[in-house]
Image (tube, rainbow, N blue to C red):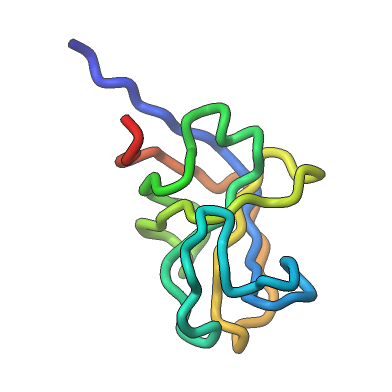
Length: 114
């Protein structure tokens, strides 16, 4: 049986656990996980809703390449606003300012719902 490899090329940006960038319950992600410390967050990403339809769903682990210091394994635990398409958002410390990368590759490593 051949293994299905799911890869996408996206635009990546950053976001903070902050009500100005999320909603008033800014420490709870769309997957209902709690962000313990906004200054030392977990390696979580939010994905645009169109990517969820491609298999990039809550709890899935992805390998990110092409985003410099942000490269590595991340877990999908949040969902972006419906206006965004083909994007991911890295949850980062409130101390980190700015970050946008084009042509970032994401590869599905493990999906807990498979």
